Amino acid sequence: MRATLHIVALAALASAGMAPAEDAAADFPAGWCDVKLGTATRTTGECMCKHDCAGPRCERQQGFVWYAYAKCPTCRCVEKSAAAAAADEPPPAADDDDGGAGDASDDD
Image (cartoon, rainbow, N blue to C red):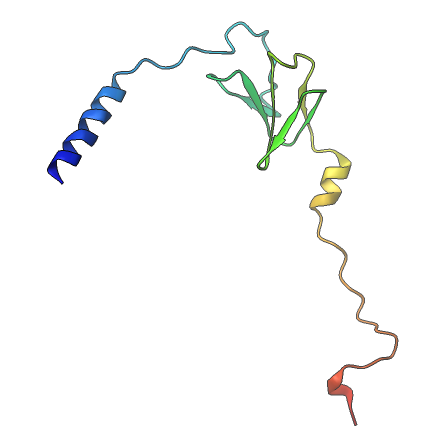
């Protein structure tokens, strides 16, 4: 048990001294990821969109929407589309009028 704790402590100390990863987006043009609509990742050069993405190489997986500038310099984050906004709305309430057919509790 003590040996395991020592190994974990040494691994933590070793990783604490690691240099941060290089900024993958350093050479991209200013404003490539609109801060109002997305968040740029420093290590991967991707823009994580808050709502939706417009462009030919937008990625949509596991509830996230993003694009990599290196693969799609014409992509951009956009406001949520009308179709996507409609998909988020709950369906209309079911009509309680069942055409006169009562339920089991309406028996005389």
